[in-house]
Amino acid sequence: MTQPFLQRVLVIMPAWNEGLAVGDTVREVLARPEKYDILVVDDGSTDDTARIAAAAGATVLHLPFNLGVGGAMRAGFKYASRNHYDAVIQVDADGQHDPKDIAVVLQGLANADISIGARFADKGTYTVSGPRKWAMIFLARTISALAGTRLTDVTSGFRAANSRGIAQYLDHYPAEYLGDTIDSLVVAIRSGCIVTQVPVEMRARQAGTPSHNPAKAAMYLGRSIFAFLFALTRKPSTLFHAEAEVKVN
Image (tube, rainbow, N blue to C red; front, side):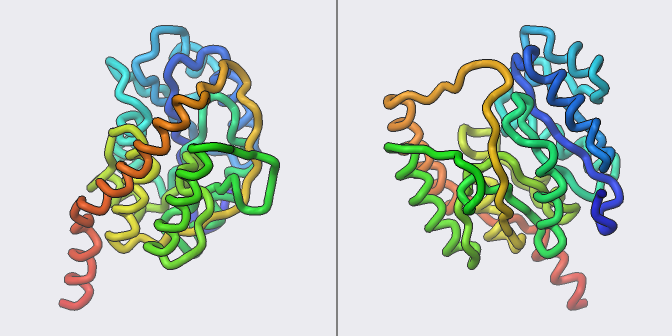
């Protein structure tokens, strides 16, 4: 069941040309006993993603052109804020995130503002190798030190945020490559958000082919380190500082 401290939860599903998978993913989430609301953000798809998602029962938000995951999630956060949701959780349209783990990730919000569904937390068989693995290890260690807690999968997109986390994301949520995972997390931590992780299992894509290859893995290593260093140059959100001033006064 949905946690009592989260009365209204919105599943945000960014989707770009996921017509082959999005319908089954939406139906599987809607079949959960927790009865989540689903917003599919159609990120400028050129296939039938929007029509199939709507037919499956999701609310669909149309973007006029492809903005990437960061831009799609920004739109989803604005929708959640305007409609007064208590929490949001990102779920991939390709079916890799198991809907039964949505409640597990949301449970992390009992003591945190952002909860990450971690693929490398002693559960499941998901593995990576080569430059991609090196990047993930580096990022996990450095961001864990920044957060003051052990985080093993800081690039996971399977993450939830409470109303405080949503407000911080609205103040700062980048659209750049890897910004939606690394940059957004670093700035949230530096702005005062509490972050935690819970172990989850990943599934194979329902459709499509993963784009991993040695060249892209090496590029990922370089981009991820750059994204982390760039995130450290960003100013923390002023949102929580304003909250602190109000409490003091």
